[in-house]
Length: 107
Image 1 (tube, rainbow, N blue to C red):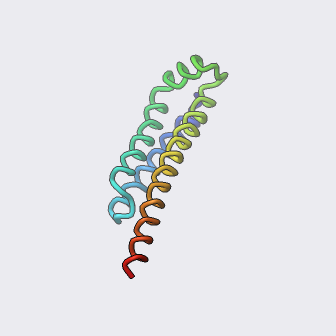
Image 2 (cartoon, helix red, strand yellow; image 1 turned 30 degrees about the horizontal axis):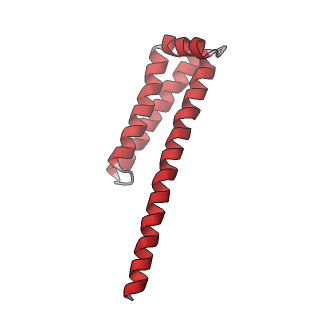
Image 3 (cartoon, one colour; image 1 turned 90 degrees about the vertical axis):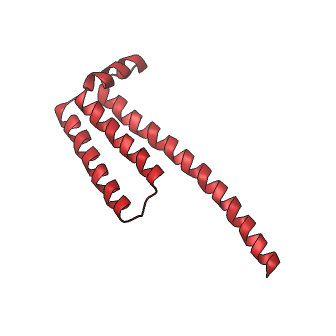
């Protein structure tokens, strides 16, 4: 993994950390959601400080470069997070529909 990619990972992790802390202070993000983002940014720091981890998994999964593994890792984690959020939104929609029907029957 190149030095420039390692620096970018650390800078991105620092920016995510600052952004999340500001959102927590303003009560604009749930603590459980912030934990995900904090661990996600921490994983960037770990990959930047220990590039042999990315190299190991890149070799294991057949990537030619560890940078390719880092990009796939980021995409995979964000896709899983998106699926999780989609599931939560679907459940909330059902709850809202139930509440709307209940209010309509009362009024």
